[in-house]
Structure formats: C-alpha cells, structure tokens
Amino acid sequence: MKVILSRPWNETSMLIPNHGLGYLATAIRKIGHEPVIIDCIRDKIHPEAFLKRIEQEKPHIVGFQVYTFDLPALTPYVKALKNMNIVMVAGGPHPSAAPKDMLKRFPDIHVFLRGEAETSFPQLIDLIHQRGSLPDKNELLHIPGCYTHETSDPQSVSCHFVDDLDSLGFPDWDQISPLDYPIAPQGTFTKQLPVAPIIITRGCPYPCTFCAGKLISGKKIRCRSVPNVIEEILMLKNKFGIREFHIQDDNFTFDKDYVLQFCEALKKQNTGLVWACPNGIRLDSIDEEMLKAMDEAGCYSVAVGIESGNQRILDLMKKKTSLNDLIFKVRQIRQLTQWQITGFFILGYPGETRDEMENTIRLSRRLPLNKVNFGILMPLPGTEAERAACESGWNPETDLLRMSEYRSPFTPEGMTPSEFRNVFRRAFIGFYIRPAIIWQFLKQIKSKDQFMILLRRFKDVVTP
Image 1 (tube, rainbow, N blue to C red):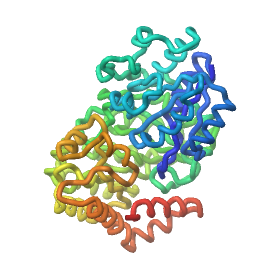
Image 2: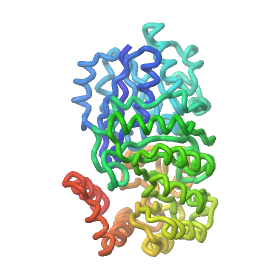
Image 3: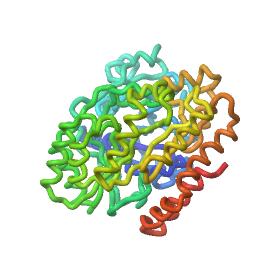
C-alpha cells in the first residue's frame, strides 16, 4: 500500500526536517508498505497542488500530522480529499491533546491516533491492507491510541508511547534530507553548514502549566542508547556532509550521567562537528561538570527556559525553581563557556500584570544573553494554562483558530489586544536594538538567504 505522510502548509519560520514524519516513514517501510512524505511547509504545497500530487501518487492512505497551529490550514486539505476513495488519518500534538476537538472539527477524517504513532500507524495500515477497506470499530479498538467518530469517549483512549527508542531505527533521512531545508533553521544562526537536527530523548516529567509536552510524549523520560545516537550522527556526517547538529529534545540534560556518557563518546569520535541545543534546556538540570563536558564535546550554543522575571508567575507556571537560581545558572554558563545563550521568556500568562511583564523584559536585558525569544502565551489544549485562560473568559472554540507563531488568541485581563501586542513588540525591539547585539548579528550572517530569513522573522515580530 502507498501511504502519504504530510503536514499542511502553514506560515512558519521554524522550518527543519520533520522527524515525526521521518520516523513514521521508517516504521511503515519496515512492514513492507510504501511511505511518501509530502512536506507542504518546506515545498509550499497548498491544497490545490496537494490534490494534484495525490492524483499522481494514488495513495491508499493519507496521514496528516496536526499541530494546533494547523487547524485552519488543515480544513481545505481534508475537503480536497473528501470525495476520494482514500482513508484519512490524523495524528500528532492536537489529536493527542484534544481528541474531542478533533472529532468535532473534522467529521471527514476517518481515524485519529493519540501519542507516538510509530507502532499504532503500521498496525492500522496492515489492518486496512488485510481487510481491503477501513476496519470496523471493534477491530480498531485493539490499536493503541486509536479513536474514531464512533468512539464513545475519545478522551479515555490512552496515548501510546514507545519504550525502546532504538527499535525505531532512524528517520527516513532520504525523504527529509537536511540538504533540502533552509540554511537558517531553528535558532537562525549556525556555526558550520550544513546542519541536521536529531532527537535523543522523549518525554517530560515536569509539571509546567504552559507546556503540552507530557500530553504528547508522556511523563516518562526515555533515552536512545548512546551508541545508537552516535551512529546516526556519523551517518549524517558521512552521507549528507553535515558539520553541525542540533539536539531538539525538551530534556536532553535531564540525566547527568547520560549527558556525560554521550559527550565522552562524541569526543572519542573526533568528528570535528559542533552542536547546539536550540529547543531549550532546564537550567536546574545543569552543573559545572556537565557544562564542561558539553563544551569539550563541541557544544557552542544553548537556549534556556527562564520564562518570567517574577517568582509569583514562575510559581503559577509550576516551574519548580526559583528566580535567583535561574539567574545564577545563566551567569554560570557565561562564566564557564563562550557559548551563545538564548533566553526563552513568556509574556501574558493568565493573571500576569503589566508590571510583571515589565520585570521580565528588564531581566532579559540584564542577563548575559546573546538572543531572546519572547513567546506570547499559547493556551495549548489540555494544559493548565488553557484552563486558566478559559476561567478569564477565553473561548477555545473560536479563538484556537487565531493562533499563530507570533500571535496568540489570548489577551491578559486589563489589556486590549493592541496594547498587549505593543508590549510584545517593545520587548523584542528593546533587546535587539542595542549596538552590541546588532553588531553580533551582523558578524554571524553568512549569506543573503540567511539575511532574508532573519529579516522575515523580524518583520513577523514587529508588525502590529
């Protein structure tokens, strides 16, 4: 059977090889079927062009990866396939975190999968292949994480998670080649080109109220073996010529012993590769020994989750750390390394005052940071932040459709959307307009393409 794997086109500046689709393609190929990845974001494939590709490929199944951002974009893709003899399947973050919402918004999608689908999707494909059509609801019940419009309570269907990450193999790098993506991936700047992202761990045990990570990949931290990770890095270097890799994990530094083993193994390979952690590390998980090991193994850049300049807001977010400790750890990184440090902050948490937002903005300029990313609070489905936003009058039924990368549908109480947008813009501009920061950026720009990507991201942020 031929299976199309795709994410609908969406306007985003964070364009990197899609690991989710890559791992699914590998899992599908293992059971003897033919996966075809159509990266609509990378190739700017809108619904009309997507339909033409479908007519050319003639697949039996089309699987959509769905983030909350994708809800408005997905509708025309589903509509285009509605009258074709194709089984439509949806998985990913939004179907995992908000199954009832998916059923309500997409009556024409046949099957939905919660959690990690590398096991469940191949089982579904094999079942469709054996039956020659979509199986009945009783058969689908035996597929982990599977629900349909006939499921009485989709929220009771447990998310499925893979324990042995090595068993998944590597993503289908031939279809998500790092050479086919922009030269300025997540984080904008790189030290050596070309770059490839990798994932080493899955899961998150932390209770942060704004994050849906544990809903998507579970609370239990699972790690690939160090030899397995090193093998993938060497393959990417030898096959694609990568000279830098980015660890996309949420919790790479969770297990100190694992990090030390990884760094030692990487050093022994003497690859000449450099690497970064652009997705963020928890500051309370690092210490001097770990920082030195990462530095000696080639790490040159990290993003760190600071989130707020106020202890009250950190407590509401359930960060389980103190503001003083966060400040100390950022300064420790600066003292012990020459790394580029990016600070992650969130503005507009439910209940946050204007003065508290100003405290966060001032802290971002006092810390020894090279870059910042001010995220507007996104009330992601299933999170405590969503519940808090709803209590203040936010309506997910309609407002989720207005969510985008630099614009949130939620506005804190006591502010108009325009006033809140101005706080966000001023936070970014105030940090980056300083001469030392501008000069640092100019020195790191390596090409016209990179400059244009940077310009577009800046425009997205500062546009009212």
